[in-house]
Length: 187
Image 1 (spheres, one colour):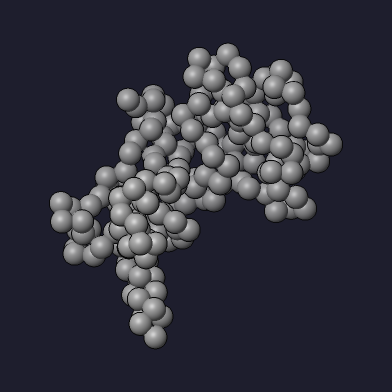
Image 2 (cartoon, one colour; image 1 turned 90 degrees about the vertical axis):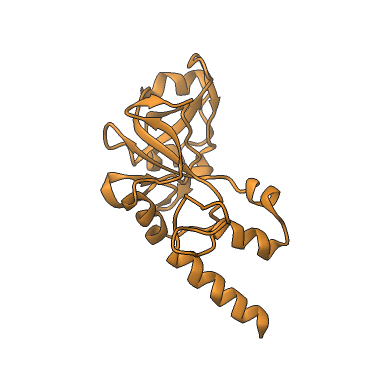
């Protein structure tokens, strides 16, 4: 019974406090405990456990590329560094396109980064390919080389909801790590 109460308390706290910024005592503004800290405590870990969670990426682009398959270039932009297999982007109308958030922001579900570019393949077209294109062929399909106007990493959230991420957007990404601002990569 104690475990059920703890889970309910954690769920209520996580839903009530979707923020990136923490105070020195480990609580959010308003006194709530950040989701990442609760999750680490539930797993029996500390800060090292939280660090293992991949950040949630929220971004904005120059145009509407939501239905185009992203790939990653090398740091110098000269070659394809990584790309999905056709089956990795989805099947049968269920694709891993980004989730729309408030303010025109998108929640990534493919693993975009500052080195991501968009191809001219739609998710549906790419998923229908019999096999993955070669890296050279993908380079010929890169259409948007500098697609992002903004990109932020939201650290420590596991299974966030759209409502949590909308709240982070609406609060100006306070405490989140900026990856790209004004179309420029940050340090």
